[in-house]
Every structure is written in C-alpha cells, then in structure tokens.
Length: 73
Image 1 (cartoon, rainbow, N blue to C red):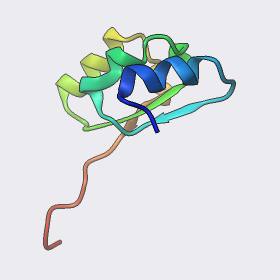
Image 2 (image 1 turned 30 degrees about the vertical axis):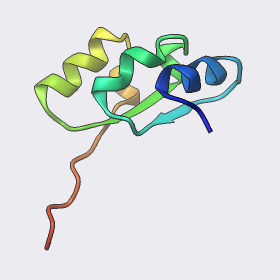
Image 3 (image 1 turned 45 degrees about the horizontal axis):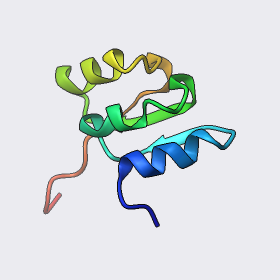
C-alpha cells in the first residue's frame, strides 16, 4: 500500500510495462516519474481531462476516455 499517488509513481517508475491510471486527470502530475508512453490514464472525456493529459505529455493513443454510468441507469 502507498501513502499517495506520488509514492506509487516513484515505485512504478522502477518497474517495466504499462500502467493503468484510474486516478483521473487531476492526479496525472504525480505520475510524471513514469514515462508518459507507459501511462494509460482513465479520464472523463472533457476538454479539461484531455488537456491535462496533453500537458502531461501522455500520447492520445493511450487515453482511456470513459464516463461512468449515472446512478439508476
């Protein structure tokens, strides 16, 4: 278990392979120690989410643009 996103990112940077990030676009900065092409962030398909990924250098091909289901649907 890690104390936070930054600690998890430091440990993941020492590994190989791709990383599925389900923390959202607001936490992307914490994962900067990991090569951007290894990151597959799950973000809302909004302009803000996409812009955060672009600012972090994450290739658009690795973005998982997802919107959760609304309650009751």
